[in-house]
Length: 316
Image 1: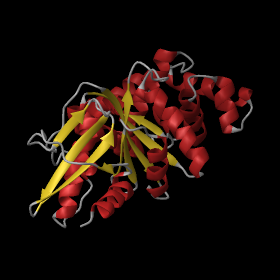
Image 2: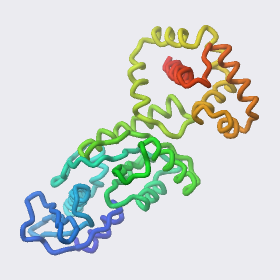
Image 3: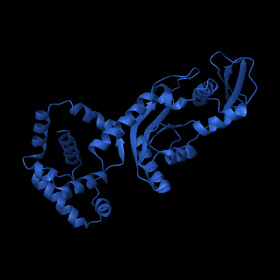
Image 4: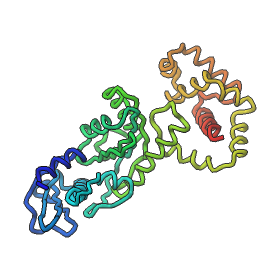
């Protein structure tokens, strides 16, 4: 295979720009090496006695990871068994040679689009920088590992996910959902946190289908509660929501009001605007929930108690 074709394949499959370079005389056995003077990271692949050498921009730990993953892809191309090395890595199938497990932090997400993930993947590749990882994980899911450093404008993975969701919805005009795995501390944790993000997507679809962003940290507690017996779960719900809980949980208007109110950070104006109802209508429904359950969900603690009880009820 010609080097030009390899470069095109890397760009097409991995969304990565590489250039062909001369093989360094001091190339290590792992096949990946930083060149600080030129500001690039070189990787090589050998097949049938021929050496192919390429370079990616950057000479830091993130560039080392990118180059090592690209090298794995080139090796699979030369062996005529191409696969996406980033997908394999995030699924925990393999750790490529030359990967330097640095300590950079990453926000890790699994992004799902009902209309298919090709548009999502392409959009994420255009907004990612050379230190980020984007991979089409199939089944409508795209993985995004976004480097988080001191220069980031976002204080948390959840805050970034909210902005990302708005941008994707506006750009693609499609409904997207985002699983938030959290912050991976170093490249070696990326597969684990991607698994968290994918798990959050699955659990969120089951327990909170009206939402668009699901955090693994929230569902970690739900997974623990799911191990309770059905009798224990029902006892918990009855204790928290009082005896009239079935009247509330079976009333679509009340539950829609509660979910919208909590989703919009207990802001009556925002929730009523989103629901297209008058604020007094929403206040009336919140008052009814308080009367039937004993929980005033305009209070943060009561709101969280109500939400958790509703999620446990869905497990019954």
